[in-house]
Amino acid sequence: MRKGKWISKDWVSSPSNFAPEVLGLLNFPKNIQIYDVTCRDGEQRPGVVFRKEDKLNIAKKLDEVGITRIEAGLPAVSKEDFDAVKEIAHLGLSTKVFAFSRARKDDVDLALKCGVSSIMIEAPSSDDLIQTGFGWKKENVLKLAVDATRYAKAHGLYTTFFAVDSTRADPRFLKTLYTSVVNESHVDSIAVVDTFGVTSPEGFGSIVKTVKKWVKVPLEVHCHNDFGLGTANALAGLGAGASVAHTNVNGIGERAGGASTEEVAVALRVLYGKDLGFKYEKLYELSKLVENVSGVPVSPQKPVVGDTAFGYEAGIAVMFCYRYKHANMLKYGLSYMPESVGNKFSVTIGKKSGAFSIRWRLEELGYEATDEQVEAILGRVKQLATKKKWGLTDEEFRGIYEDVVHQKAVA
Image (cartoon, rainbow, N blue to C red; front, top):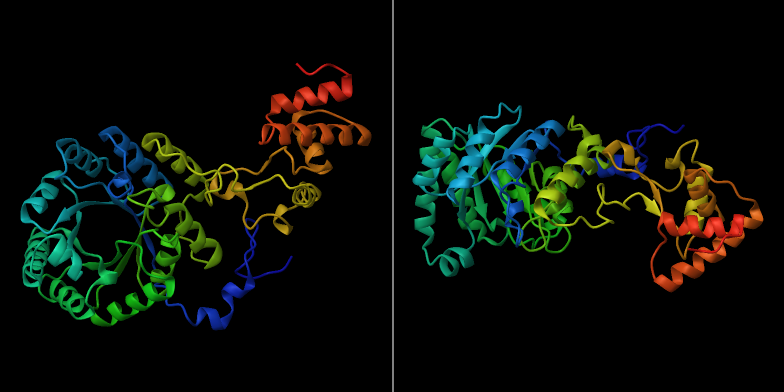
């Protein structure tokens, strides 16, 4: 077997990922962490409501997977949110539990009452949000940010400053804002935030590199998915030197959502050789939990956790997979094994099926058929799939099998 960082028993990516000229462009920190914001940012997905018990269950599952940082919520939203943050903080989890906060001392006080060890404090940074959105002046934002972060630090909280809409802020003001909270409040880290998902990976990486020159504290990145680039931008931010990526399970969140927890984690491991030590095989379970409590269906084609993310219908693709079925499907058809993330391989029987698809499903069901019968079944499958405009259920397939092999009428 070929050897290299790009290949293992669970995946085969591309050797180009680890070419010297590519690695020379990257500046990943030694320790990378995921900061999962599903319980707060994920709940901002229109229509979603997480009750206290939902948040507790999500937090427990995140901890089980090995996520090192969890944002439990914004205590000021409601009593139930306050209670959820407080209970999560006292679950005895291995992960570091954060509360989210506006740049207000009373918000910080609520976080302290919850008993969290860490806090994420936000303030707007772009002219549009400051002047038009809030009707404030820049000097007011600067004072609020410094006062709130200093207050949090004085009360022993690990403090991260979250500059909303960093990517559209005036660089001169953004630099003043960041350096002020670092030098005057001594925050532990700062977040570069693409609130409206408006940067390209290259643009976002450039911003992170610039901010990294301004301050000497760790950087975090928070990316939204308005152009489908949330995960790509989070990876670009990490590759530019940020040490923490904010992510949402299933990518749920307001508008088009944000960087996906499972996508970022698996891409780091497979495409960049950065194993975060997670129980990756539990990612599918985590996804299903969030899908169930949020009521937001996961697209079948969602990377990592979609139900057909490792699925085929096209006959030629199934043929290759069938031939490697008892060896290693990574030789053709898959970039990484579904079992490595708790998912599974699937073959859909439908219009685009071939003879190998039929044989695959027959073996799964414990049936036998001659080559002639396989061809007859295939013809009937294509006919029914075209008529119903969808793939066949196992019950429909069995009906065709029985009719062809045992000359029984279709029920």
